[in-house]
Image 1 (cartoon, rainbow, N blue to C red):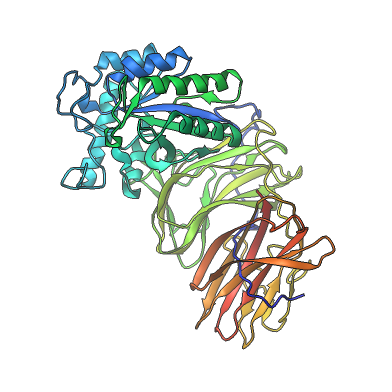
Image 2 (cartoon, helix red, strand yellow):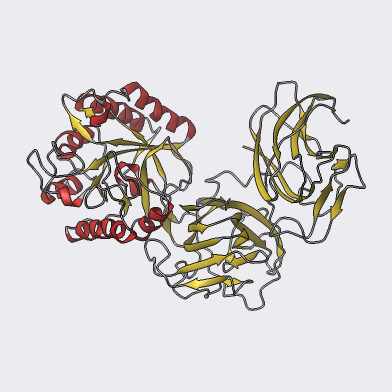
Length: 595
């Protein structure tokens, strides 16, 4: 039945079923590897890290002995220009009234106490901002590069292979982050607070800043408990550790006794097998072997990599990539049609989970997205299915980490597909990895609960409409980028009309609903999305309005839905075309999954 109340909701998904023809000259397949490959953190696991900024001497005299007392270690992010300033006052920009470690003391911190040594730049300058705690003049790109490169080189000259980085004051933007990624494998923020969900984002490690006045021990213990409950990574950030800390939050001090209480609590959880203490670089998901050939594109788009858009997807030698080899990457520019980059095919095993990691720098974007999809092939090399995994539709620099599990036992090999669609997009891809994880180490790929979400069977399989003349199946290649053939065309009339999904059985909990929407015409009004809720007898009992979309062009929207009451047994998605709006749109690739 059609409910006459206002109904709107929105969502996004993408079952990118691009039936790419079998490659005529496919690269030789790699030999399958054991699922027990050497991978750090191959599954969601509670982790906790202690990090200390600036290289202050009390990291060695106060923090390290306290942590060692409980069998714990930490990571020290060092300002190289301040090393050796052992008297106060001094000229270190981080703080002039604190003594800093010598190189020998930093070596002791690493070799005796097992700490990781990371970079915190040379001079503790703001990399983007000016004023307040920052310098008066904005750094140039060359000056930023010098802060990053010279810090790393100085640390290396003293025996420290620094791959972890933390920007002073947590000050960065996307251009700076792209520079950071050339020299370091991770970046820990400061203003970016919260715990980190697996499989993490290497270039935005969130943290919990710790200060005596604002973060009592009970609050930090709660963060540890949260990590245990949700299998996330809690990263604590300290500065000045003192027996008698200041109560002024601007001093960024913390008490040795309070650190002792927190460390004792963490140790009790470690001893119980509930959480693991790691230094920053050991908290990342890393490992070997990489199943993909030519991951840093030093051989260009070769060794089995290929593209269907050679004019807009090209090998780049402009040092636009990422650690550990930033010299070469792949440049992806939006064109008149979607362009795709395809990896070599890799043999996969049903029941084994895999992790894809890649560096992505979306340097410019007006509309659209850069997306990641996995194509699946049978033993004969024929394309049989695929899975949309992730996308970026904003200006951002990141490590795109996501898991993949073969859809069925029929899948014998898989390849990564990276696509670009939209306008004004310039992006760089580098350091692409595919790691085999232990069988069953991650949840299988979520099952799509709604049938015919790609509309390959038209408006059928439970999909219905109250306006067959204006809401119609369309087969003219106007759907989502990688499976564009079939979609639903929605055209406004004088009355409001609707498209209804099949009813989906639901239970208490959270669901994700996703879809592709392209509004090609509009004079007023909006395209609406709404969730209808039904009882066990299939009777409509309630509903949830979510959102309306009025912006022209492609919108990839995400919707979160939870049943309103325990009486809700089924739910369906309703797409609303507002009357007298002049709207025309194409709707495709609906995915409804349980979180």
